[in-house]
Amino acid sequence: MKSIEKIQPLVDKFVSSVKGVFTSIYGWFSMFFGMVVFTDKLEVIAFFFVLFLLLDYVTGIGASWIEHKRDPEKNIEVYHVESEKLRASAIKIVGYGLIMMFAYFLNAVVFQDHVKVFGYTPPMPVFEIALLGCAVTEFWSNIENIKRAGFDIVGGFINFVKQAWSLVRQVKGEKE
Image (cartoon, rainbow, N blue to C red; front, side, top):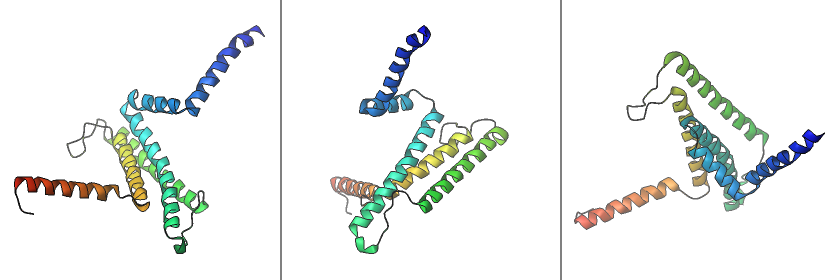
């Protein structure tokens, strides 16, 4: 019985620290910082892939809600959880899983060494390249959802570059 009494304060301290990580903004920031800074490249790519995947659900729900508020007569259905959407999400996750399994197979059997993409990237295993491609796809999906919500990041950046280039040409004295 004495051994349980010695362990109980340690267990309580551990549970308290876990609660602190997940219930405070400081805990979330320190966990995020630790995962990004103190891990290897594959773990960072996997972390951002999962993060972008989860954010895709959030931005998709937000975009459909804003579309509905913008034009309620279009009869856009806004559901937070819908079986059809969950099936599509499950199929997407299975697709990503297949891509990663095939990349792992290629990495183990075909490409024993690291690969450069178009000769520009640092040498990476095929699995990392596939995971990076999945993360970029999810990132782009978030950008599309944000555009549906009314904020065009890509269009704004293009307009900024055009205006900056126009100013540079005016300063040089060139005609547009």
